[in-house]
Image 1 (cartoon, rainbow, N blue to C red):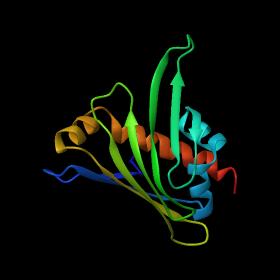
Image 2 (tube, rainbow, N blue to C red; image 1 turned 45 degrees about the horizontal axis):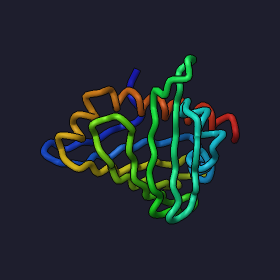
Image 3 (spheres, one colour; image 1 turned 60 degrees about the vertical axis):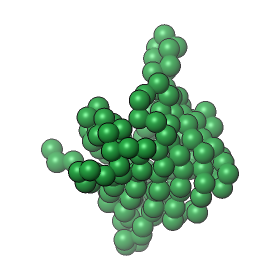
Length: 155
């Protein structure tokens, strides 16, 4: 099965571009990034905090059945323009990638389709490449497939 989410990572650079077209109106695609209940469904993680505004912050966490934290990520929100753009930092706890800057844009293609573009900037090309080698491509494709399924039911 072909990956519908494309990740473009030029050799020698410290950034990458994640692009996916969805069969969702742009407002519903944005809602899937701002509504904690929807985020929890498509990401499979708990939203501890999500302040959808400039100077806001966010924090997600996943625990196993024994209550041990398996995934935790957080960051600061620098820009929040509904249906258009989110600019935020992203830091995954206990991982060697460091803090990244994410510029997430939402583009209306038609009344029923939209494009998500995430420009991720890493501290170095080595840290970016390290993240790519750890299954990022498969993980983001699975998450985006789930986003399409979950949000698609809300149409």
